[in-house]
Each structure stands twice: as structure tokens, then as C-alpha cells.
Image (cartoon, rainbow, N blue to C red; front, side, top):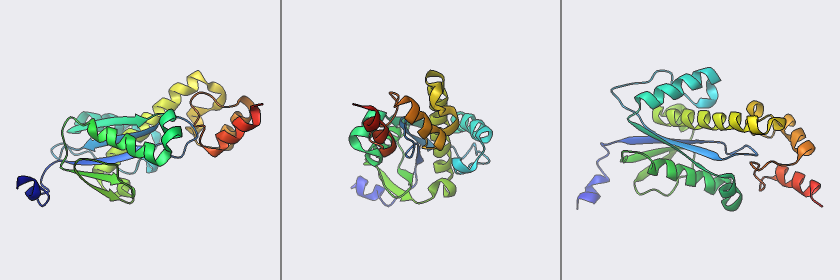
Length: 201
């Protein structure tokens, strides 16, 4: 059968997948899937955490201009609180792959867990430093989430989202103690839960 043969024939499109925002106390978890175009190579791709914000922004635009196709998706704060952060992350990754305009033959995912997908997929630990398509996905996910943090900072300036990006820094924890949780906080995360339990009668 042709489908059996396809398992041994890995010529075809390869998508890289990564996420941003598993650790923060607030906001969605964002995932991206990218299929790069070998005819239009992108210089400087690396793990998004190793790049400066300015470099990430420049590559963000270049990836979207040069990639064969890309998709960015997310799982909401409500989905994180209902499902847990791991399952919400895998859901966001699946949505990102499903959103690709072209169907990949193989999906390479950063980390050690895989979303449920209809095509072959492999998990690669530290893949964002090893595979260009995963590096590109990590940049799209990170910059998209950083933009979200900047937008929410304008709505809720007391929390400092533009500075800490939602992570549990001393500044963020102090703001939680002073102001309670905003609608974008993940109530299932312990620091937020503790604040809510402390301020609620």
C-alpha cells in the first residue's frame, strides 16, 4: 500500500514546532510551526532565548517573509487552568501544525513530548538550538508572546508585564500581592492561587 511506503520515504516538507510561555504566571501559551524554504535561507537562526530582543524582532519579520509557510497558535489562560500547562502546550502545538497552509511529511518538536498529530513526528531535546525550523518556530512563538505582554502591560500597567513577560519575578509577585490577580493570570499556578486565597474572604 502507498501509505506504508510513505513511512520509509521521508522526502517531503519538514515542519519545526516550538512554544513560548510555559513558565509564566499569566497569559496564553503560544506555539508556532514553520516550514522553511531551502531556496531562501535565513541567517542567524538560533534558540530564541539566546538572541537579543532586537535580533528576534528582525528574524521574526524575515521568517514570516521567507518561510514556505508558518502558523502561530495558542492555548488560552482558561485552557491552561482547565487542562494543565503541559496539555495546553501540546494543544497549542497541534493547533499550530493544523494551521499550516501546507501539510508537512514530518514534524520536529522541541522538547521531549509530542502533540497528537496525523503525520509522523519526532521530539528533539534542545531542538531549538539544533534544527533551523525549530529555531524559527521558537522565535515566532517568543516574539508573538512578547507582543501580547506589551499589549497587556498597557491595559494593566501596575503588573509590569512588559518587563517580566509574566514570569514570577520579585516585581511581579509584589504586584500580585498589592493588586491581586488580573483576568489574565493563571489561577492554577501556585503563586497566583496563594494570592487569591489570601485576598478572598
